[in-house]
Amino acid sequence: MKYAIVIPDGCSDFPLEALGGKTPLEVARLPNMDAVASQGLVAQTDNVPAHLPAGSEVANMTLFGYDPNQYFTGRAPIEAA
Image (cartoon, rainbow, N blue to C red; front, side, top):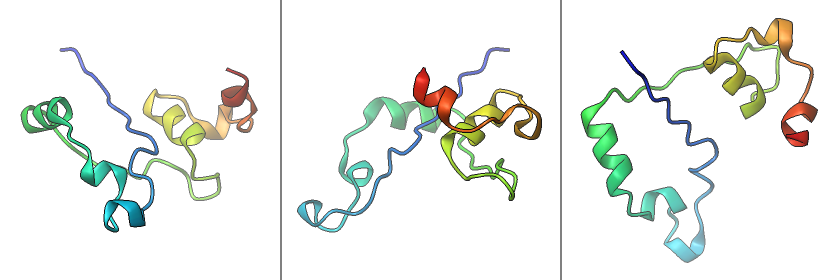
């Protein structure tokens, strides 16, 4: 079985006055994402250990099977890439 993990990291943003108090994601027209979501499994997870920064550098590391307690060295490798 093949999997596709879609990580829309940061796409929700904050509500904007210019968008009537909605976020860019709320007003975006996303037919392809809607189709994938309707045919697959949509889930939410909390995979960041409480003692580490709650950022994409830790969260994405855990999604790909790496233990951030062992491999997380900070955000610098992400920024450098």
